[in-house]
Image 1 (cartoon, rainbow, N blue to C red):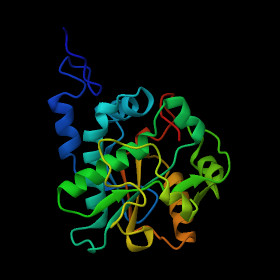
Image 2 (cartoon, helix red, strand yellow):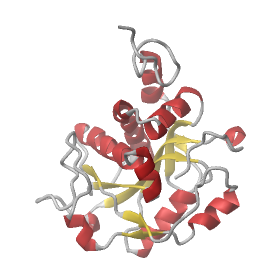
Image 3 (cartoon, helix red, strand yellow):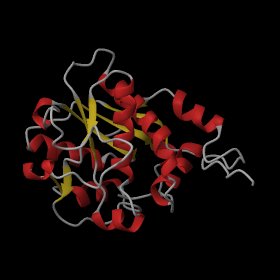
Image 4 (cartoon, rainbow, N blue to C red):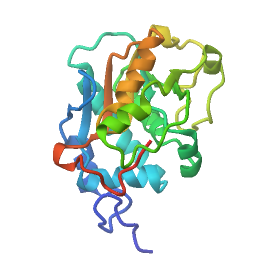
Length: 243
C-alpha cells in the first residue's frame, strides 16, 4: 500500500512528513496582531497553511496533536519566561454552530485540548474549556475586510452560563482531564484564561473574545494561535477559512 501524502507538502511520507513536523515544532513564535500579549507559532503560509486547512476543513484529525503542540509553544511564548503559578485555562475562540455542524467537529476546541495536554506533559497545570459562545448569528469571516470583520463580531460573543460547566461537550476520549466540573480541578475564577485559536488574520475574533471574557470578570492573561497571517498575505484567499 502506498503511504498517504503529507498534508503540508504532498510528499509520500504519511499525513505529516518529518520536515513539516520539524517546521511546526521549531519555528520561533512571534507576536501576532490583536492583543498586546498575543503570539503565533508560525506564519500562515506554505505547509502550515495547508496543514491547518486539512485539519479544519478536510477532517484530518490526526494533525490535531502536532498542531496542538505548536499552539502550546505559542501559549508559553505569549505568557513570557516567568509565568504566574496559577493554573492555565485555554479558552478557544468559538466557531459558529453551523460551521461546526458542517465540518463534523470543532477544530479549535480540539486544538485547545491538544495544547493543554502538551502543556501538562511539560509539568504545567493546564486545561481547555469552551467558555465562550455566540450570542447572535454572524456572517462568515472569509472575504470580509478588517473593518467588516470587527463590525461583524462586535458584541457577538458571551460567556456561557455557569451551569453549562457542569455538563461537558462531546467527550474527547484522548483527554478527559480538561472536562468541565471534574472534581479537584479549579473553576474558571481560579485560573488564568488564555485565548487560543488556529489562525489570526485581522485579530477581530481575539479582540471580541477578550471583550466577552473581560465583561465576565475573566480578563485573559494572553492569547495564542497556531498561525498568523503575515502582511503580504492579508489579501483575501479563496480557501482562507472563516469562523
